[in-house]
Length: 307
Image 1 (cartoon, one colour):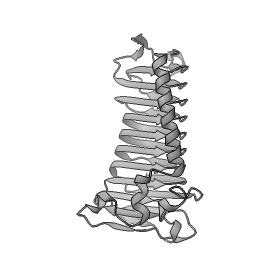
Image 2 (cartoon, one colour):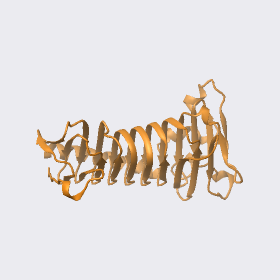
Image 3 (cartoon, helix red, strand yellow):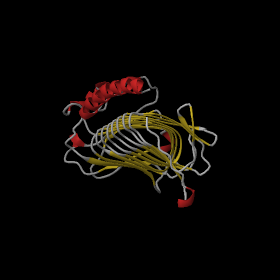
Image 4 (cartoon, one colour):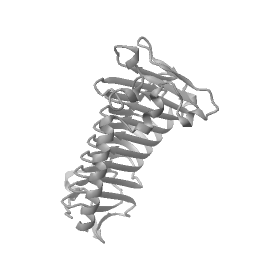
């Protein structure tokens, strides 16, 4: 098992080096190529029959987009922060912190059911893809009953905060920006990051994370079906309901497993209750901690496991 782990770590290390190179530059050229003209449609959008809205953020007022026509959201942001939260608004309201000139202002496009937001004009032409020296804060307010089919966030070092939203699929690609979800309901969360920690509180059905040294902290009100993490040295920290059942598969060289739940060992796996939630951890030295929600000191049971 150690031999397989070493081979996997070597391959994963190569992947991380490539990922860091791409993310340090901003994002992949394919993602940004169509934005040489910041108002040009992407190849997919150019085929859409629905007329598109587009524009540049004003320095004096926020941008508003009809919430009834948006089911997908894509955000491409370099540095600063991204905040998405419900408010007492009727439409999606987008604003950013003050910028020095129009060339550095946010660009946006609404086509079909998708709303895309870009960091600034001529994004690909700034440095290796984005103007990483400029930091701006993006704020997106949505109606309180608003829900999304998909949210895609591509960032270099921007910190993402999402509050009280229901989203079917979330896809995050970041270098060092942290991600924080508070009181959210998400079906599938997919994260690729180098060193940005992920914090999630709410309900979640499936989590997939690939990271170099980032840590995952998930405090869940439900028992998910799957939690998977591939990491060099990051840790996985789960808090689950008291009646949770899980099966942990852990392939590490020096990682440690601790749990508030009583577990048994079977075929190299750690099993609790009905074993329903499948937890998988592949890492060189990543730890796994599974905590019991509202547990007390007298019923805490801790085990340790080294591969």
